[in-house]
Structure formats: structure tokens, C-alpha cells
Length: 146
Image 1 (tube, rainbow, N blue to C red):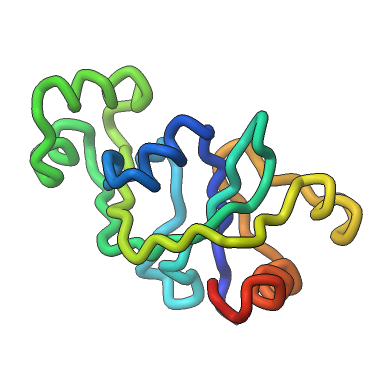
Image 2 (cartoon, rainbow, N blue to C red):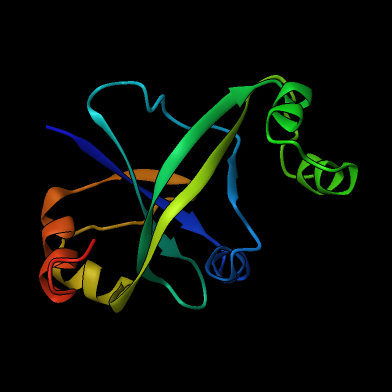
């Protein structure tokens, strides 16, 4: 069975993704998407104060390398590289997910609703695998769009 990933992203960065200003999501740790049982569709959990699953995107390309190579691969400006450098403190293993096919859901699922319906649900600080029953719920309340 294919695994789907839920990424926790701060509201400020979710807004940048929606506006198109942010085209890469950076992570210190991330699973290998070349693994045949991990989907390239990523679900977005917008953290406090929103606290809801708000959308999804497809990873067009997953970059994984040391910091300098990663910044060269994505054609980062010096300014952008300096900004990202503050987040990616371990410069030997860095991930960049190129965002494509973004969908923002009309009907979001709040953390309260997730916890009420899916006992013990926690979005995780960075990423977690998403239970297929949650994906089914997202699809059902959004007219099949995920």
C-alpha cells in the first residue's frame, strides 16, 4: 500500500506557497520518494494558529544533497541561500521539495475534527505518514479532489 506524507508547515509559509512565492519546501529530514511505496503527493497541515489540513501538492522533484550542492541545484540566489542556511543547520544532508500541482481544499479538516474522528491523531512536528482513512475523508468532503 502506498504511503502518503503529511507535512506540518507554518501559516506564513503556506501563504507563500499559495501565492507562488515559495516553490520549494525545505526539510532537514525526509524519506526517499524514490521508494516505490511512498507517494509524491504531499498533504499540507497548516500549524498554529490554523491547525488544519488545508491542501496538497505534488513533488515535482526531490533534491537531497549537501547544502552547497542543493543551493546550486535549485539555482538559489545568495540572499535566498542565506535565508535557508539559517534553517538547514546540518549542511551535510538537506532536502528540497519542488512544489507543483498545488490544491487548496475548499473544506479543510481541523485538528479538533481529526482528533475527534481519528483517535490519537497528531500532525507531527515535521512530517508523518497519513492514515488512508484520513485521505478518504479529505476526498469525500472535497468532491473527490485531493
